[in-house]
Length: 224
Image 1 (cartoon, rainbow, N blue to C red):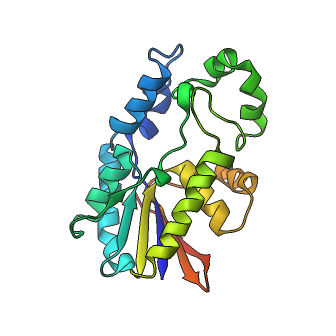
Image 2 (cartoon, one colour):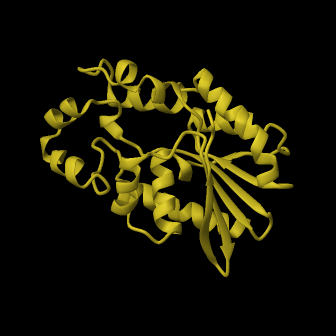
Image 3 (cartoon, helix red, strand yellow):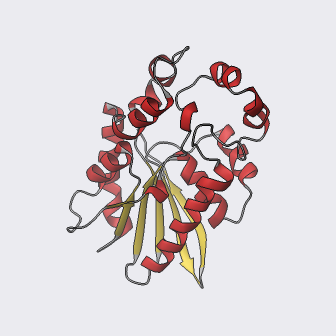
């Protein structure tokens, strides 16, 4: 029984992050920025090719009748639609448990603007990123995202009683939280690895469930 955690394919935000989305000063409100991140940000041409690559490798990995979940963000939904286009009715299912970290009013703020707007949060953001709570209704990695990841892990474990494979199309921050939980490693340890080399877009983390515990068995990364 397997759980596959897939980071969405390359988005326009990934490709043009510092020239398009992070303008200084930011020209839109936090709410507008977050709405854009959720509903507008789609895949680049390279992202489409990565998703097509997933379509070539995933059928053999997932086997028959996988239970497939995506976040509620367009870039994860679009990746799943291209990667697994022939799922039965009702799949994939969207769940906020797999969403990107909610950055609230800080969404798309540059660090300079963030630190000047919220100086009391600057030290945590610089030194303890996992406990930093995004202002204006946002969440921290250590609480909000990790708690959602724990709920999804429990869901996946229950779903594996009915299906051989569960697939999660998600985001880098949610994947960090899932790794921390399933691999029994601290968030700072996972984040230190991410600073050396972030999980690539369209990469697949492989986990197997044995005796009620998930074990990491490998990683598949795109050649594109």
